[in-house]
Length: 233
Figure: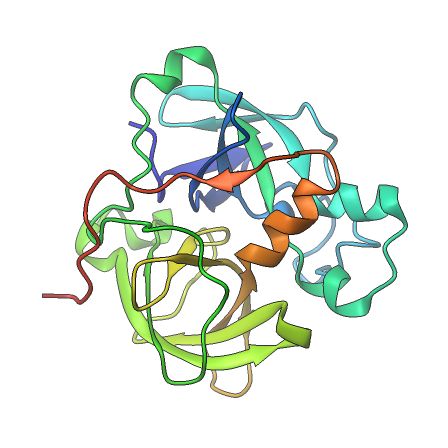
């Protein structure tokens, strides 16, 4: 019932969970930090955009978790000044309630994995994602996505990706796998260039490293229990 790709609801805002995480003591479900933003859709700078506070309840598949980390709030608390970090560090962690743990599977639907944590991609690499916006009216065949990386931007903090059908509102926060099934990114933005309808994907390794030094020591992505199978066969 709880896995990458489930819909999450934060004060009515809909997003898609990316991966399951742990710090060795607690299990978390990841979503984008902007899913709890209190400003408009154009407010994407995490260092000066409003957010709901830590402790905000987040619901998913009949369970209610608690937002215990938000990169926007962490950067504001730390007084972060690096422009790329402010623009692209977009990760939040939901602490799973005890009753959800027994039904949690870290495997990405359809593709399997993740096989570990990736460092990023290079232009032309295959990428994979499972997105679940309710705008697709529950048509599960439209959720798996395969595409290509168009290369990094923002000092390596973000990767522009292009899939046959791009991520849409409600897909925000969904995870991206590289060609070997490693978790490398979190869907953050819908972009105009270099290709209309492409998506901006935050670098998960950098986002985890930031979380590790700003309140969640030992954080890591939980590998999937099902093997990674690339392609939309």
